[in-house]
Length: 100
Image (cartoon, rainbow, N blue to C red; front, side):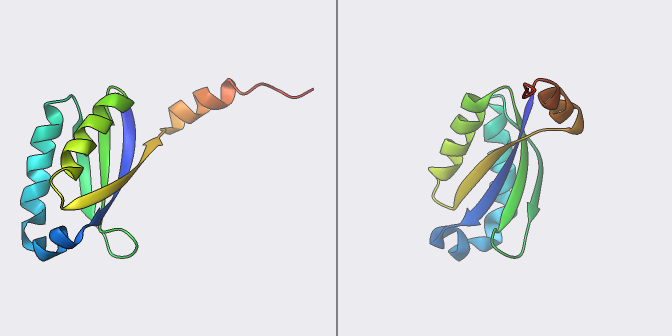
């Protein structure tokens, strides 16, 4: 499974309904599982982003489908980044071609 970090920002609608954010997150987690995506963690944050989600998915398409479903509800917008563990980054580094 691949790991993805989603930076979450409330829309105006999401801010108006802030008191339901934890319930909405739980519903998203259940919906995401339907397309093979697991929401490992969610943290609400202070600063440039309102929340951060850590997702696991079999591929980019699955996480894109889950996040499009989330965005269609109108409460949040996301910016999502692929993430690599220490083991994965070592594997990536081992494949970097050496310059002569």
